Length: 42
Image (cartoon, rainbow, N blue to C red; front, side, top):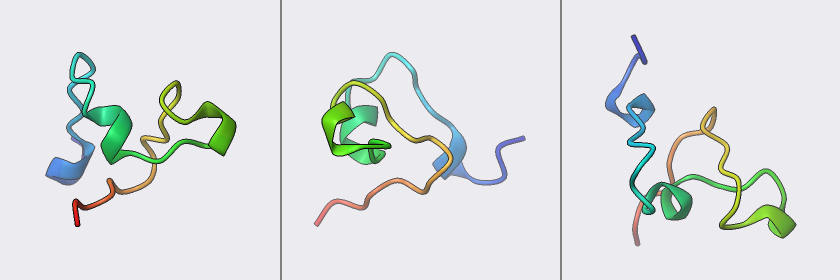
């Protein structure tokens, strides 16, 4: 249903906060924007 594997989000995995951007720099590590694609590791 998500359209791609980028939209399968394991809510229990803390890595989600590293892969998906915050909506605002002040919310980094607290809130993630799941409507955007994940950041790719360098």
